[in-house]
Image 1 (cartoon, one colour):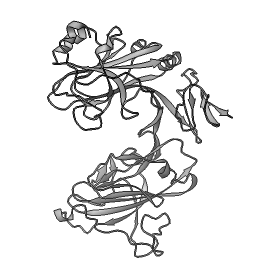
Image 2: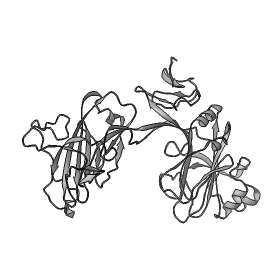
Image 3: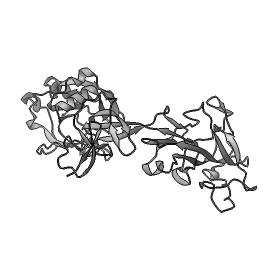
Image 4: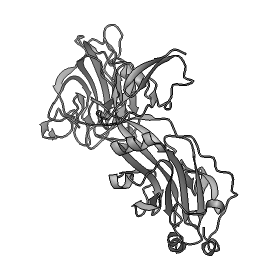
Length: 437
C-alpha cells in the first residue's frame, strides 16, 4: 500500500514467504437434467406415466403424534422367504395382495395433470411399497441420477435387491441422488429385467412416492484458482482495513492493480471466516475489519487459447458485499451474502481478454458486517465431458484448440507432458496414446 494509506490500515497476522500452491487436478462434475430421461418419473417427466406393482398398508387410521414416522406394516415374504424388495421376489402367493397401478402415486386426485393412484389421503396414515420393472438395452455412458421423491418418511429405494438410499424424516417431492459407480453397476444393461423397489410412509397431509433415472450432464472443470470445495486451502496475500470507509482510499490507491507494492501484505491461506465452519482456514475478524485479498496465478499461451474458446467461470461464496478485480479491472460485485452457497458467473469475452500469458491477479474486497463473514473464490474453465465407457475424454464439440494436456482414463489432467508417467494408456488432444516407459 502507498505510505499515506498504510497508516490507516491494520494487519493482524505475521507475514510469511509466498509459495503459490500448484493448480488443483481437473475434476468431472455431474448436474441433474430432467431432459435426459432414462426412466421417467412422475415429478420430472409427468407426461410419461409408468406402471408398477404396489402394496398398500392403509387401515384408514388418522394420524396421532405417537405414530409419527411409525411404519404400519410391510408386505409378507414370499413362499421362498424372500423380502418384498428382493430381485426375485414372487408376487404369486394368494396371501400377498399386490396391485398393478399407474403413476402418479399421490394423495391428490391428480398430480401434474394426471390422475393419481391415491394410496393415502390427508390425515390418514399409510405405507406404500412399489416394484417397478424395466429393461435397458446397452450401457449408459457417464453418471446417473435417481429421483427419490417422497412424502413422508421413513422411505427407502432398492435397485435389484440392493438398498441405495434411505430417508429418515421429512418430505421432498423434488429429491434426487447421484448414483455411485457401484450403485450404477447394479443396473442390468443387457436387456434383462431390472427392479426398482420403493417404500414410502405417510404421516399426514400430502402423500407421494416416486422413482426414475436420468443421465447426468457432465462437465470437466479445470481450476486455475481452486476453492476449498475442489482443492486444498489456497495461497494469497491479504490486508485488513480499520473501517468500511477506508475502502474508498484503498480503491483510489488501486490496491487491486499490477503496480501495488505487496511488501507489506500478509502471506496467508484462504478461505477466510470469522467462525469455525467449512471456510475457517484463516480467521478473519469480519465483524470488525474489511478485507482485501490478492491471488496470483500463471497462464500459458495454450491456457489463453483454451479460455478464449471455452467457458471461464468465476465462483464465489461470500459474506458480505464482494467486489472482484481481474488484472486491475473490476469484473463482478454482489450485495449482501449467499450463506454457504457459491455464486457462479460466466465471464464475457471482453473480460477474458484481460488475461495474459504469465502472472495474473484475481483480487477481491469484502466489507465489515454485523454478523458472520467469510470468503472463498476461484476461477475455472468448464468444458463438456464425453464418457467413452473405458475412460473419459474432455471435449467441447471440437472447438477447443489442441493444448497437449495429458489425461488418464479417469479424466484427470496430469500436465502437458508424458515425461515421467508410468507405463499405460493416456489421452492427449482427444486421442489415446501409449506410454511404454
